[in-house]
Amino acid sequence: MSTVNKEQVKSFLLELQDSICQQLEKVDGKSKFKEDAWKRELGGGGRTRVLKDGNVFEQGGVNFSHVFGDKMPASATAHRPELAGRKFEAMGVSLVVHPRNPYIPTSHANVRFFIAEKEGEEPIWWFGGGFDLTPFYPFEEDCVHWHHVANSICNPFGQHVYAEHKKWCDEYFYLPHRDETRGVGGLFFDDLNQWGFDTCFSYIQAVGEGFASAYLPIVVKRKMFEYGDRERQFQLYRRGRYVEFNLVFDRGTLFGLQSGGRTESILMSMPPLARWEYSFEPEENSAEALLYSHYLKAKEWL
Image (cartoon, rainbow, N blue to C red):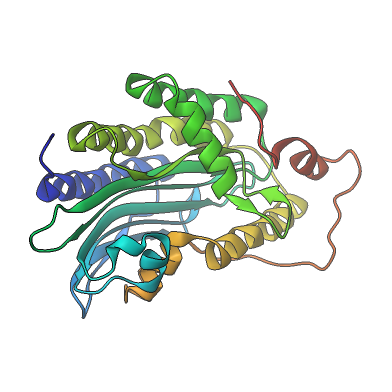
């Protein structure tokens, strides 16, 4: 059985944050990420990087955090009661990109590692993460490209992995009170330890590094599309769904807040602007209606 190497994971995550920030800055061509280094009173800290008011990205955040403590947050012990009474460490890179142009999808990615230790007992550890795409004015070819990249990442780890982690993504990023998916999915996984440390670590490396290959070609293809106030207002309305999911259902948000993480860093995933409208109904046969009828439901893209 391969040995758990926490420092190896941390080193990769810091390098991944650097790499993704550099690639997003290059595509944006104007704004740069500004970094806030922070410390957590109960143990640990991180570095939050936010890009604002760019040519392409209205706001983007790429956050690295490494927190630890002697007592598990309630959200974690509710999910895994065997963790009670153990010291824990949690580290990860999480990012959300909110483009300015409504024809470019919003996107989220995350890779993380968790370990809980108790003297005289084997550590409990796992990896988690994934990436997902939230378009407002979707293009079929973009969704197919997104899922082809996801499939190519998964294939070396087993022919079943893409189907399993795609299904998990569809089910996780789902708003039951709206009866719709948050977007067109991607990959999501948690509690990953069954392959042994080395293979699991290789998988999150592939997912983290593969995000840019999945997302940036879509950004480049759509960033020059012209749009007006109608498209902008619909984008802001649909961003409201993003807020609803992150504040009501997202386990990472709950863990961060309950574990005493830095609130500004945890909530960097929120869009800079969003709106809500009572009983909104898209016009029949419109581009907005197509989003609801064709894209906000789990489907096969390959």
